[in-house]
Image (tube, rainbow, N blue to C red):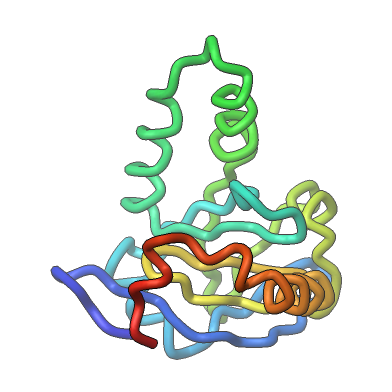
Length: 158
């Protein structure tokens, strides 16, 4: 993890077991940055694009996303769907004294999160995936990467 303009940039992959109460123990490498950046205040919601995943935002980043999504016109059915998915289903969470965050049962059920999950640092947010679904998605994406490459991607030097 590093900082850009004073904000933490989260990266990396961690396989985690949820406990019997549906709590996720945040990896130690993120705990100080989360506390520093948002006083431990996080927001959990559905992934905007993928089933089998949740997004976890530091509060300030969440407020930016929330404001952009709620500013969309509700006359468009796609906008309403995105607003319901992200804003209507969002839940404030904070790590407990042991660095665990409670994943609400409804969000866990819809995303299919069971015992094994994968936490991905994705820059300004985290993604929490069902491990099996993420592995399947990676296989599918690898097969279709050539067809899915955008113009912007063809200019990347990786």
